[in-house]
Structure formats: structure tokens, C-alpha cells
Image (cartoon, rainbow, N blue to C red):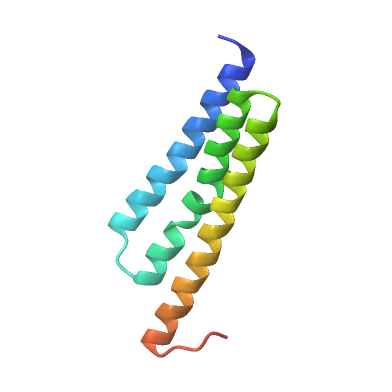
Length: 98
């Protein structure tokens, strides 16, 4: 087992762990806004860790750059959609955006 493979496995399992913890928080928490906050580790750290692990496994090259680009787009898209859902939830509850 090479060092690159070990790094890949550590990054992959860290990302999967973030996604699983977020899923557990989503299932166990009751309030809408609290559940929305539970998705943050999956959106940010989980997606980026998984994309980085795939890029390390692919090695240096265009495929790794494309994988990292897709991972960054997914992470940013998750953050933007979380903000949009949070604003819509606040408006539905009659709260202010501050």
C-alpha cells in the first residue's frame, strides 16, 4: 500500500464520515434551522474531502483538476442552496433576515 493510497483512503473516509454525521443530524434534530445547520459539514468538508481523495487517486493531470473543479462547484452550490433555503424558511416563519 503506497502513501498516496493511504492519503486517498483517509480523505475518503473523512468525507464519508462528514456526510454520515450530517445525515444523522438531519434525521435526529427537530427544528428546521438546526437541521439546516447540520448539513454544513456535508456541503463543505465532506464533498471537498471526497473530491480531493479522488483527485489524489487519479494523480497529477487534467482529470484531477476537473475532479477538484467539480468538487468546488458542488461545495459552493451546496452553500448557496443552504442559504436560499434558510432565507425561504425565515420568510415563511415571518422572521427578519437581519
